[in-house]
Length: 436
Image 1 (spheres, rainbow, N blue to C red):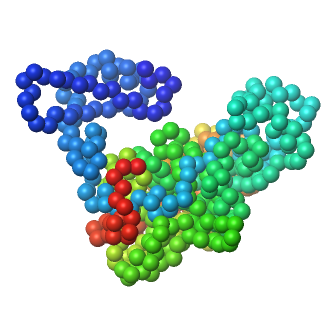
Image 2: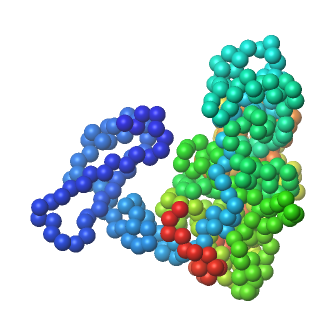
Image 3: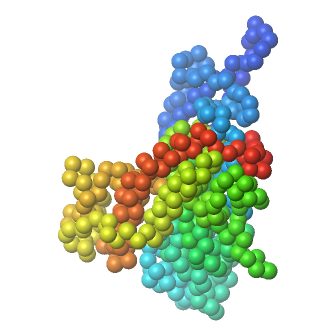
């Protein structure tokens, strides 16, 4: 039990007492997180009568046999998946070690070697790049020999971190043809990534100018990313907004005048709010996030504007980023070591010979999904110096995260007010979804 398993496992104990009588049963619950050894130790020591069980009161509409302490209004709001109906789980390459790289040159050199007929298949098989029922290694190598790699581009790989990918259907198993063509063909289009269930460790939402992998928000199976393009391009024209039918007209009738971009920005602000993630943690854990769309036009506009600023920061497109870069002191050709953060001086050491300042504790701790942004970026590049593109990437990330931490308190206050007086799903012409 628990061996090489990432998904949660439920152990149910049913007790039938001869003197129980009529009425609802008593439901108790406990959980344990950690290593396999921790879980086995907990199972071995637990008893049905010890004090570690929490008493639950399952209730309509979900009747969950897990803790669910959420304002009832939350379950009446539309889900993000309802609002963006064309959505799909993120890309799964099944061979990142072949098609993803830190730098463009590294990726091109690797694919050139992949296409070289003098290199045996066994070299790639030893790296886990093997034939499977959906993909043939020799055929893919022959295809690259005949025509070089296609669609080499940057994408959000883990949270805000970007890497290079060969988004080539000859090399990737699941490019998600339902959604990805709308984003690959139009590089100005924007995708919203979100999860069906999330923890409270970081905002499980992201904006991107292209497709994203399923693991962009979490390294766990839990928290896998779904992606939805804002605009859809059809064979007979377009683009048309990927929004639930009638949502914008119904908002307009209620005095909320907005655009598809304005609604996306509003939703992005809500999903990134720390207050929202804490107040509705149990609800977010068990389904797609639900969105309190404010009934007050001025409040809606303010939150949409804040979301616009946040999206611009996370796309690394905000005009103020360069002015907010941290100062870099030392040898910019130094190989990265384990990053060391000193809160007392707001200094982040990338190596003994290179430091960034100021970096606040809030910036250093900030996560997008399950990924600590700056820590993850540096740890993935340990042992070598950053090239000029990566150096700018790091400074842009540091500036974007620092500005995000300053913006979030404003977003929190706006979301708190929106949650107090917001539209239900049914008032927007959408069914109230009980479970995802």
